[in-house]
Length: 186
Image 1 (cartoon, helix red, strand yellow):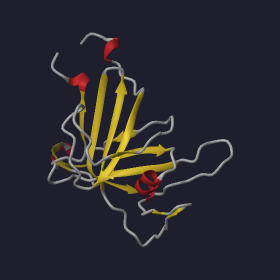
Image 2 (tube, helix red, strand yellow):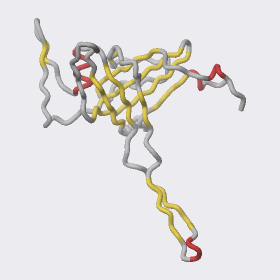
Image 3 (tube, one colour):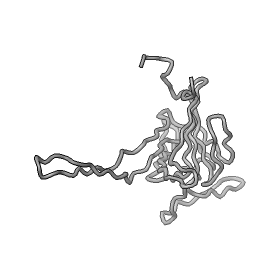
Image 4 (cartoon, helix red, strand yellow):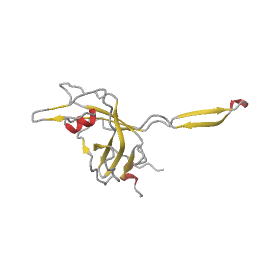
């Protein structure tokens, strides 16, 4: 295979979108994102999508010379994850990042952090733009997990770190589906 610098992609821009679980899934990079809200600016660290390892393998050894005669493989328990930090402070970001409901009023809004509330899965989309090339990843059943650290400092924007665990959605048939215009038939 020849080296081709035109095939090197850079995530120049993009968007993170969130919607309720069972929101209509996109059908490609050009499909609509109906029911999903764009959550605005993401920090310069961007978005990281991680596919877990292959799981466990158990070699079965023979008595003769300790030769491995078979290897039993099982799927792992880890789920794919999507990680990013949102920079905007608005109702959509707070509700998506913290998994809370914002009560808004004329002069202010409020929300409660209650550790007895279980996180709720939603439908998430990550769009990546590199000139005319587009990448869209869809996680139909992703749940915010882990700690959300909100730091208040006088020399940086307030950010909301999010880690999503992407369960396999039995209706969609995947954990994460990704479309990319660079993968079209030449």
